[in-house]
Structure formats: structure tokens, C-alpha cells
Image 1: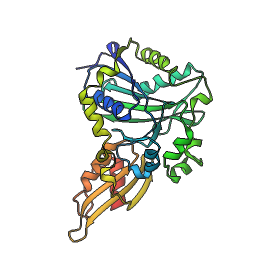
Image 2: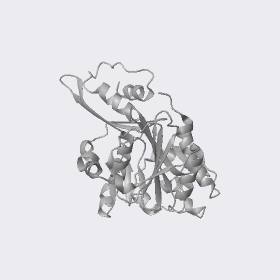
Image 3: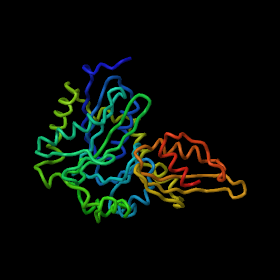
Image 4: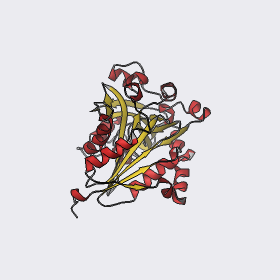
Length: 324
């Protein structure tokens, strides 16, 4: 059925809890609960949390021990991309939309238009960043189901830069690529350059959302979404198995960096049979489905025979070329 772009349904949800596992469970439920011709803007905050991408190794992205010791949380999202630090000086946004109206450029426009009200001219840069005067304040990541798309990201406003630097581990090669010495020199808190807070930006985001999509948004109460199913899902999202499970015994055997992201590969080969018994890939790629496809192709394959793979998938092709 074709989408009526003049009759798009808009929804706004303002989070009222700072628990990362509940927030991610609500976001996940929105993504899995298909609403035709609808786009939802979910605004939320986490308290002292490092959030890693779906394919990332927590131990290589974060000082887990220090984070937990100081009362922080580690969380894993469904999207790809790199690790980010959240606190109450950081506002997070999630667009969940029917695939037929899912439009990253338009969604980015909402954020940029809201910030324009504070006199900030921003740019979409690189793979997934929004920057101000060359410094990043928003990292974005994406996922799709059969019917819907998710686009979420951060807005650094008054984030604790000392804790960000303390908790996040950034590979030197990534810093060298950008010609900077530390993660904090790459990013900017918008409160440094404008009279902006994680509270006063919200009305401007709502107005920009309605302007870009030319409609009036319906407010959905966050607390009514937090039913027993959401609580159970949040427990799973916060479990040690989900966060750390397959990464506890991860040992990097091969590493590489590409335009689409970096990878570390742990590969276990049955020397007698010559087959790949197990393979695990840590990556900040924005296309986690390609990482999973590469794992599925390689696992059980003979190490002496290069497997067939979709030639049009650059990520899978690059991974297989490293191994073979």
C-alpha cells in the first residue's frame, strides 16, 4: 500500500527515567511494534552509562571495571557504530518510522533545525556524525526491521568530559585518522557555545519535528509504555550474558580498519579437519547485519577454500579477504 506523505502520523515520547535498560527496552519495543505511516520521536536520558554497538567487545571499548566501580552502567544497543558515553548532560533521540517514510536526511534536519534556534549552524559529517565547527556533538546509528527503521543518536550538551575520557577507550588509529590527540578534543559540549540545556532544547526539537513533517504530534506517556514486558526485556538487556557473554574469551587474532569501520577477529580453527569451528567479529560498522552475514558464511567453512559470498557486499568481501 503506498504511503500518504501528506498524512504522516507523528508521535512524541519524552522519557522520564534514567535507567538505560528500560530506555533501550522501550526503544526496542517501538521498533518491533509496527505502526503504518507513523514516525515517533523518542527523547530520553541515561545516567552515567557507556553504550556500545551491537557487535562491539565491551572490554576493548570501555574501562568496564572503573565504570561499574563508580556506579555507572554498561549497555548494548541494537544498532552498529561505536561506543558513546551518556549522562544527564546528554540528550538522546530516537526516530522510529515506517520504512516507507524513514528518511535519514529528513531526520537529521529535525536536529539541525532545532539547534538553529540557538544560533548554531551544524553539519552532517563522516559516516554518522553531526558537528559544529568541525567538532562532533552527535553520533548516530541505524537499524531496520522488515517494516520499520530506527535512527538514534546523542546530543552532547553538558556531558562530563572527564568521565567520558576516563571510561571510553578509543583506538589510537581512530584518533590519528582525525588528526587529534584525545577523544575529548574531537567532541564538543554545545553549552560551551550557546545557552542550551538538555531541558530547554526539548520544545525546539518538538517544534522542528512538527515543522519538518508538517503535522501535529501526539504525545505518548512514557510511563504507560513501561509495562511488565518492558521490565522483563530491560532485565535481559542488562544481563551479564547479553552484555559480556561471548566476549569473555575473545582474543584478537586479526585486525583491520576500513572506510566502513574497524574489525577485530577471533577465529578458532579445527586443525585436524581444517574448518573454522567458531568465529567472532568485533566491529563498529554501521551495518551489523553484514557482520552477522560474514560470521554465518565463515563458520564451518574449510580454511583452505574461500567461500562464495555476495560480491556487492563490501563489508563481507573485506572480512573474507583478511582471512583468506
